[in-house]
Image (cartoon, rainbow, N blue to C red):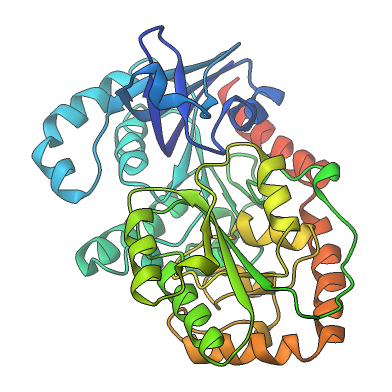
Length: 393
């Protein structure tokens, strides 16, 4: 059986007809659906690219995985300007689809959902973030997509969430509120992370000496300040002004990297700031995480961030924010407002002066991350996919 998957992905197509993405959403990611379905069709925004542009990128398509293109648009202005072109592409994408899984929230995925529903065929949702936070800078979009997600989760046959509790309460499914026992309404939760056993490391021992204390941070795309890059740069500035030997490594790449590099120069801390650029391989990310002493993630909007789980898996103590599913991972004492430079800084000072607490955090984080190891998540995902497939047979 063929499954249509709509997601907020951005693909590049080279002249040989192959599809590529920067990170995470390569063939291995989409192949998880092949454990139940025989063929996967990904509906994604796509644009042509030169082969040089995709160096280091991940191949998306392959055996039994194909791509149906939507116009490559970013931002609400482009969607509005090219609305009818986009809608024509969406209608074409869903024309022959018999079964769908929609990953929300996403402007393009919401559009795919709208036209797939008209077919009257079974579909399920994977809710991966909260639009209330994701669209916080645009109150109209925030209201509209929060409302749309609440409607969507009540109408879908199945809904899976990346959190174990938070998103379920804000966006309940029919299976939850009506206590349905029928097979045509069902609910689950699982992270979309692919965390294999060899990614994990042992908890850490800390001996704080004269070596730099290294902060590490991960963001797939450095295109906004939603992940807190500016907050971290100000933390480094504050701590160095207090004579703490602090450095930071930012994993990832994007259109705002140059802006943050310039900000680090303005703060006169640029020699203590490292940008790795694009790292497509999980092992490359792992090596950078292992070189850090603490993971700091002042994010403004998340579902259940894989970046935090990966850092926990290699034994890094983590500081973050109390948004969406993060309190399901970290204790309240390690969560601060995303703009609160003082609280993050004070906590880091406290931890530098207390290596035993760092070691305790490391132990707890590895133990918690084991809940997200792939062998545990695979069965939950497959059970969910199978319930959807049975509705289509």
